Structures are given as structure tokens and as C-alpha cells.
Length: 171
Image (cartoon, rainbow, N blue to C red; front, side, top):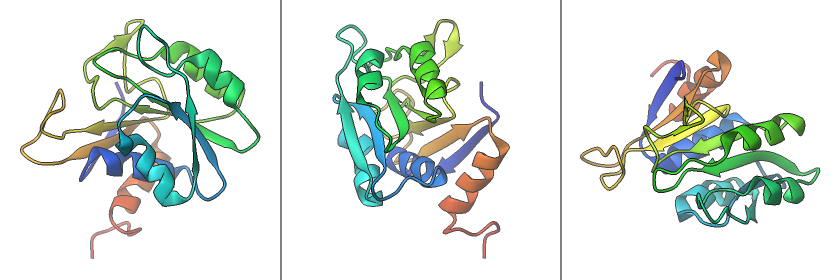
């Protein structure tokens, strides 16, 4: 349900490329659920940004939107929603929260490809979606692989440049 899927070498790199494309860096805060794999947090640390852990919804194990709303500060620059075990986060509410505060929403859908929320596929709600094809994921590769996805032409161009050391063409 998105226009662009840009291949990268891992799901972790998909998140890193997404954050870099949004110019997330030192001093910036990014909201994310307290329950997720380290790969969701690691790119924030690498960029010098501050992960802000938010409580989860006890039914979906995903980011609790009310807790996220309470955690927003002037330093908040993005929201990462993680869909776990095929259970989608409440994307309608999370995207409304992002829109209200002018915060891009990134979906980490490494464990939820094919899932939907209110009839709309996960990965198509936020500005950016990140996918891992690690062999143990729902859709695995023979080795590590990933994709960063968007419907924005400008973001897709930035993803392609960032995955290629900033170059628009190879070599």
C-alpha cells in the first residue's frame, strides 16, 4: 500500500536510514514502546538521539497512544510504533497524535507484515515503514536484509541516497 520500497541490508539499517532521512540527531527525542527488540533503539543511540520509552497497551503489546501523548516534549521529533506478534498498534490514534504535534510516525513492522489495522495494511499508516527480512521474521531472507518504505517521493530519494553513502548514483 505504499509507492516505494527501498532495499537495505537489515531491518536495523531500515530504521537508521529512516531516522537519518528525517534528520534525527543529537538532542532529539523519539518516542518508542518500552517493549521492543534492541534494534529499534540502537539507531537512535548511534545518532545521538534520546530514546523515550513509552508504556505499552496490554492487549496489543504496542505503543500506548495516551502514554505517548503524555511523553511529548518540545524536543520530540518522531514517534516509532512497533507492531509485535502480528498485532498492529492503534495506528489511527498514533497517526492522529503525530499529525496534531507535527511528528512523523515510523512503523517498525518487522513482525507484522500482512497485518492490518482497521482494514488498512500496517506499513501504510505512517510516513515511513521499516521491515526486516532476518531469517526468523515472518518474511525471512536467506541472510539479513531489510527495506524502508514510504509513499513520499522525496523521502524515497533520500533513502536511496543514504543507503549509498550519500550518492545519488553508484560510483
